[in-house]
Structures are given as structure tokens and as C-alpha cells.
Image (cartoon, rainbow, N blue to C red; front, side, top):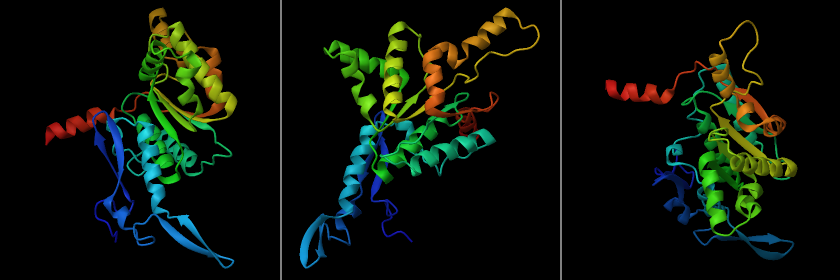
Length: 279
């Protein structure tokens, strides 16, 4: 049985705060049974006594890393344990995301993940679950960004007198980056140039990057017999390759494990709302 009823002995609490999900150190961490709340321990080595930081102090650092990751408020309950796969593809994506997080090594970053599928099928859930584990359990600096906010941040950087490289530097340098809704937007020259610069720099430095998109990962809209030109154009515009260009598309597949959910997968958000309305 857990000693602390509030955090179940995790030593931290996760909650919503405005537009973000934030963590805070649980009160139980201040009464550490190892150091008595002092934050340090004494270790005897070869006849000498050394002072060492207690493990309870690392909780504060990990909480700070989690808050710096800037997860959205809706991610408050997003963990690997709360993700319930309904298809083989979802189960595979969960396995890849979980393995990436649990086996992450700073000295040997692993391949990332790009997951595609309809809205409301758990893509953001997996990205946030991975960053939550990496920050709170492993202590890895990470960052979440939704693509449209990324472009807004960089434009604000320009207005503040920063160069393009200075504006994207925090996202280039962070150990693990999750980019949500890649392919969303107008596809302007500014957007594509910015995305290309960011991905190229992370690609060249071998950093782990996670992506989610509503667009298809397929290379083509489909082959076979006659397809109405209007339908074909609609299908083509639903391809990530068309929205981001060949250069970015190619690097994504080299950087990441690619998984696409079935196009007919139901939107769990609508299902949840329907269930609430029926009560």
C-alpha cells in the first residue's frame, strides 16, 4: 500500500493550470525518510565522510523539466497506462513510444516516432505520455509544441530582434522534441523553411524527435483504375508528403519509426461526449 495517499509515493503531483499541465513536488517529499528533509546524506568511503545530494532532491529538478516541456492542459491524464489501444496499429505505436521513453539514453539517442491518423485517436496522448515519462521518471529535458504555436513563437522571436536560428535554438537543442500536427497550416514559404531548418538541424545532430499528424504517410494518393479528378486532388492534399515537401518527408522517415492508424478509426472524443450526454 502506498504511504502517501496524495501522490501514491510518486513524490510529485500533476494537474491542470490554465492552458498547461503542470507538476509540483508533493508535500511528502519534504519528509524524506532517507535524509529527513535535509536534502543530503553522508557517505563513508575509505575512511572519509562525504556529503551527497539525496535522491529526493532530484524530484524538484524533474518537476522543473516537466513544466518546461509545456504539455497542454488536456494532457493531464495522458500516460502509457491510460492509453487503451483498439487496433494493432495503435498497440504498435504505444509500444514504440513506450520503448523510446523507457530505453532512452542521452549518449545514444534512439530513433523517433511519427504517428498518423484521424483526429481523436490518441496520437497526442502518446507523444505527451512519452514526454511525461522522460521528464518525471528519467530526467530528460524535453519539449512539446503544436505546429501552429511553433510558427507563432518564431514570428514573435523575429519581432524581438532574434535571427531565425536564435528563434528555433531551444527546439533544436532540447534532447527530445515532440511536434504535434505537423503538416497543418498554409504551407507558406516561411512555414516550410522554418520546419526544414528545425528538422535538418535535429536530423544532423541525431536528436530524438516525435511527430503526430492527421495527414496520411502514404507516398501517393492511390493507383489503379479511373479516379475522379476532384476526388484524386482531395486525396493528394491529404498526404503529408505533399504538404511538407520531399526533403522534409524523406528525413522524417529516416529519423522515425512510421505508423499510420486506420482511416476509419473512431474519434474517441466524440464517443466520450456521447457517453456523458447519455448519463
